[in-house]
Length: 159
Image (cartoon, rainbow, N blue to C red; front, side, top):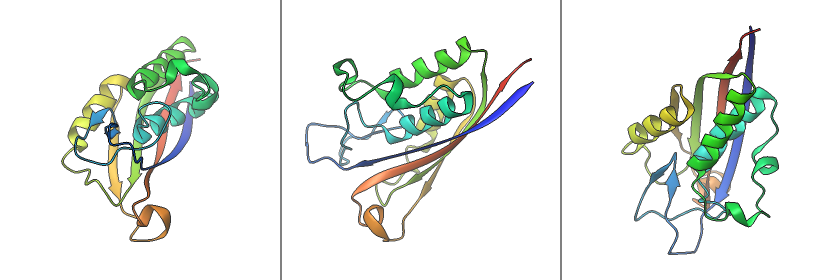
């Protein structure tokens, strides 16, 4: 059996576009300042996808969904994540779990954690856990200029 671990990281700055909606882990958070990006800028879903692609040795998000391709403008990152999971399955991989740490001063994640974990776990086909972390006022994240996320994924492929 082939067992692999992948790491993912993503960071997005906050957007000044009042028409955008903050989306984290596929969950919309109306009333919160949205993130800037080509797609919906879902930093959590992007990081989960990056960790899965890395574990399976299938490249990265930018290779498969470049921000120069208008097909992906404004797309739900859950759509991208479903595509990534399909790529893994086509290559014989199964996801065991994904664990994420979201670094943000705001919004508070606890009211949304269960919905994010449920949606991401259903999408990936395995448990996805979300933990909120603060930057304690340090640097750009501590000044609430954006949100970052790190994730680790475990995947297996039978011999």
